[in-house]
Amino acid sequence: MDEIALTRIIEQVVAELTQQEQPPAEPAMQKAAAAAPAPANVEDGCLPDITEIDIREQYLVEQPENGEAYADLKRNAPCRLGIGKAGARYKTLPQLEFRAAHSAAQDAVFSDVDEAFVASQNLFLVQSQCDSKDTYLTRPDLGRRLSKAGAETIREKCRARPTVQIYVSDGLSSAAVSANIPDLLPALMQGLQNYKIDVGTPFFVRYGRVGVMDEVSELLGAEVTCVLIGERPGLITSESMSAYIAYKATVGMPEARRTVLSNIHRSGTNPAEAGAHIADIIKLMLEKKASGTDLKL
Image 1 (cartoon, rainbow, N blue to C red):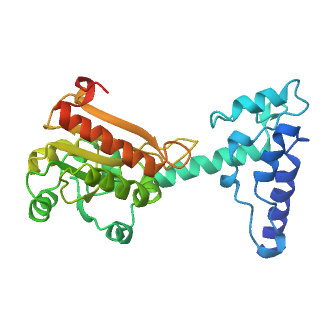
Image 2: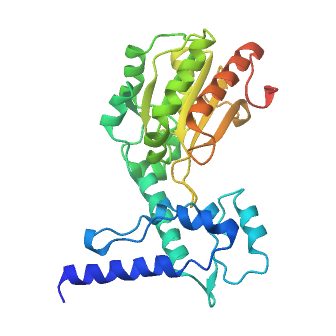
Image 3: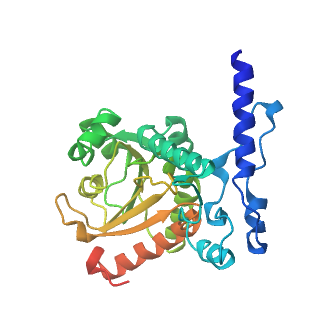
């Protein structure tokens, strides 16, 4: 049997399993079935994209006693519940979805943000003291400090003493940067502009930890520093981003002085809405001259 024939057999089996794993839908679950990707057409050589299935709408328990109410509850959160069992094991489709989510999480951690993307967002690129992704993962301390060349570039290209300094960092998810920054950063900049708040030149830090913001703050003398950084990916999404914000951050300051807005992604806090909300938080910080636990929201 040649490779093409074997590939078509695998595609056909996965397509049939995708259909068979769905139990007869109750009225409230019809929408979930409609929202699922269509089975693959073996002739087009493509498998269905199981990552596009909304697990909030996926209910696979066969012959449930009160499946309608359970499905309604499940829609409130993207949890891997109500996915059914095949004996003592997971069914095939949920198992494939789990493995796909795990693979996406690994890719988000180990992949670098494309330099062309960084340039397309009008950001210049600097680097932490980490020389690779492996170093970044094993030496968090180096990820909290800028490289010598990075610090010099920031001094050259950024204006000193801005009211607010914003920058972007890959953190633990390169996927979060590419998925959110095109909407998040413009919304944040627009929000601060509407409040007539002075903003410095934004840039991108490769292999950066949250603590880099403290050195950036001291380097530029910013009153408020904000980093938009990729979160550690999970099995629900690999594209979640956080905003860490601090008033007059200093190297070695306690973590309690940071304010954070997390879960910024398409299924969490919408990036554009998050940008507007961060602008509101920064405005309040400037008024109260405080951040973290000292800031009363």
